[in-house]
Amino acid sequence: MNRGEAVVTFRHLPTIEMWKMRVEYNGDYIDGVKLSLGTMHFRHKNWPFDIALLATDSSGIDPYRADDFATGRCELYMITPEEMIEIRGGRCTVMDTFYRDYRLTVGIGNQAVIIEPPFTVSFKALETVDKKSLGKLSVSINGLKPSTRLQLVKAEDDDKYIPIKLEIGYDGKLRQVFQGSVKSGAVKREGPIHVLSLECEDGGHDYINAFTSRTVRGKEQVIDSVLQDMPNTKKGAVTSQQQLVRPKSIGWSFKQNYQ
Image 1 (cartoon, one colour):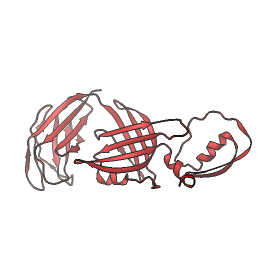
Image 2: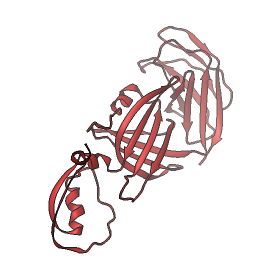
Image 3: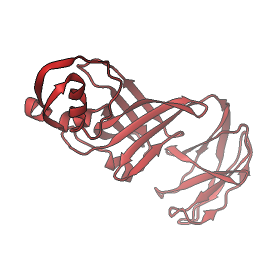
Image 4: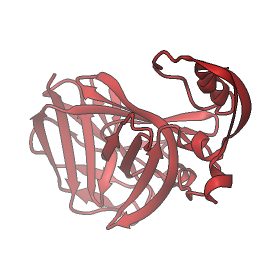
């Protein structure tokens, strides 16, 4: 499906840091995402679309006047309540585009934070069955609010468990390409944008923090026994295994072996 994208650029901005905008489409409100200083980005599933732009104060409660505009060029007039200055001269462009969709789900405390377009996300994922390597995901996210990105900052030796899942596709049809946990997270600034970079591993948290010491009688029991000590790891497809001649003791601790 083709979608509509509206990018509004302002020549003048209020001095306040917190400001918010949204578009109205047939009575539906679509929040805008601030990409950079003076630029707002809107997307909608239907194209072309006529939109009316509304500005709100920093509290996000009371809407203030903004002229209606249609697809194509526009002139925007916005009055900020704090300083009562008028912002003139917006430019709106609309493009017919075919988008790749994605959904990044991150667990913070007891809540699942879902990151979807139009947030800018770049990623590189590696899934492997190599016994010497875990599945990995490197992902960068632009423009998250401070309270969210600070909760995702994590050192490698921090025991904090942050589950993460990435789904990608087209036209809303998404397929999971990675599920694991955040190994480390850091924030850097690129101009006016704060970029959160996450390094993730499939099963990495349990692999590093779990401790196993058990006795088993069959090879199939080895996996089931180890998984009892890895609460965040699920059993995948396993080939059939022969029975052991005698019971065998297994023991493993990444921290004791490598730290």
